[in-house]
Length: 388
View 1 (cartoon, rainbow, N blue to C red):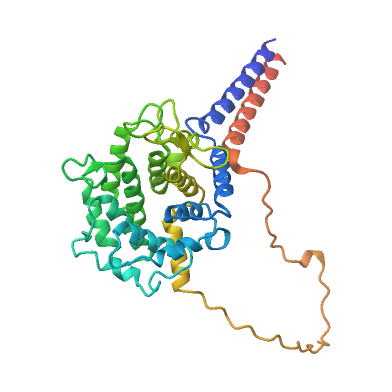
View 2 (view 1 turned 120 degrees about the vertical axis):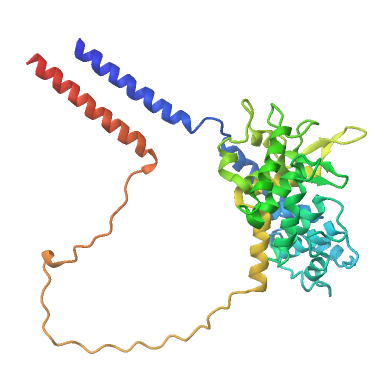
């Protein structure tokens, strides 16, 4: 009877230990399978679609959809050709540069415009930008400069990193006004992370502190209730800065996950519908859909702007293919008439490739169970010795 009690107690301890370990990783996380489902819905929505704006291009490309091959962008590119880029607004100029890079069109030579040079000439020595009326403009200029790996990135990022610490900013980046904005703050975190995460850590920390102050108990950001635009922009910035933290629940509230708030806005077909003002009729909203999509695309593939940077670099620095040479006719080697020594099994090379078996993800559990098994053996051995 005493032996049974000992065995029962040890088995219960093992089960409790295993339960505790399995529960640690599940706490405060949102199933990534749900996000993967959202990604696939979005891919189905955008693939083969006629894209009418840079934002739709950004959304599709963030998912890994190569829009020049898998979507219709002819009307959008034709619309770009109607623009006088010497007089274009900063936002339009910046988004056009990014769009062209993503679609394998050189922004340095598009419709007789060098868009990169036009944008760089608007950057002043102190990092301020001609025509800017808010940090939202500065951030999109920075995204465009990062796309083309411009020498102006540092001076613009240096200036931007001081703007969310001025009096009244509360740590936020803002629209023209200035009016603090959770959306723009999310963009700012992403832009500065790409520019130099370590260098601009103080500014990023202030921005995250602002976002935390605006986070509601339901996991949404802002004072006006949850919406896909804001939630997508904030999470996108946080993903670029701290992907593991987002996926492990670091930014969640006690009872709500920030990613769940976003995914709940997506419909089965991959779109987002919202109530429109002043009729409040619920209908498809392109901007909300693109913002949500770009966020889940960032989860899947990393920052869109790093992809744009890679696409641009591949375009301006193409890899040269080595010229193919005709194979030569092999010359049969002369036979060696020297007698050879027969190799016995004992003389073979003792080096062998190790074959990895098993799954090492549960090493802690296995080691712990082994220790407990050893303990159980010793207890039983002692009990046997006492009885005999």
